Image (cartoon, rainbow, N blue to C red; front, side, top):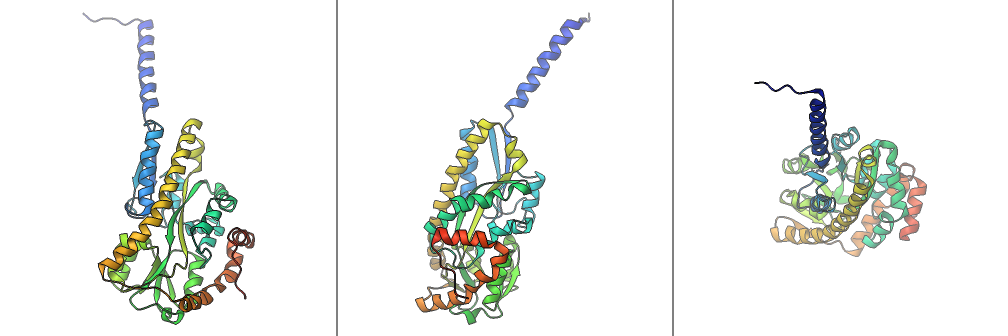
Length: 339
């Protein structure tokens, strides 16, 4: 015999099912897709993994961070557009990537010999100058959360690089940056913009002659296996900005945003500590591999390199902004090069 359900019972059942559905939805974690272009064992890769772990711990599983390393989702030129469209929620792109969005001031970090050490650098990235730069991303639908170090760069090629003349005619890979282009041109090299994920093969096939990288990137991408010479120039800085889609970030419950901010602060310390250790260890590993001759410039060689490169500051002032550059000079005590 069929049982006939009365209207009150139908209403009660509907309310129960609606309640179950709502609770199931409420219990579903908020997913953050975090994409980046480097290996998992780099400072950025380790910091991203740490952030994912801490975000889940601090929010007690209410937030789940899915990390996609090694350009698994997007390459260099694609990731920022993906962030703006909401295809991913979080990135940590290198600072020069923001120039094509119209925030050219970030290319100031590409200027050669701008920082002598991490202490000078952190007075900028962890102070008001750095925060002011991050705020400029808001108009692009991006919220800047923190700066993550990668390290100071070295030059590599298949010939010794001891003096500026040694760079003449070399096809040197760079990120897309007008400042880096001017840097290579000042040395007489031919700058070649190429995605990071494609650089190893280009070096291996001799489509490129050399490049510049922090040692950790060089080693984890095995570039030292296809580069015979390395000069410890520490001529430039490579860093990242940890950024999030603004609409997504602003739409988070305030309590979760506070907890994620704590995870950002903790992961920033991990990133910066890892950068120092990873670059030190990478240099040791490159040396132990025995495939690359490492050259430590003499004071005279370093001075010659600086004389060749420091005029790039004046050349690029109009692009990075005179106010931005002067603010960094004040923070670090840098004396502008004579024209």
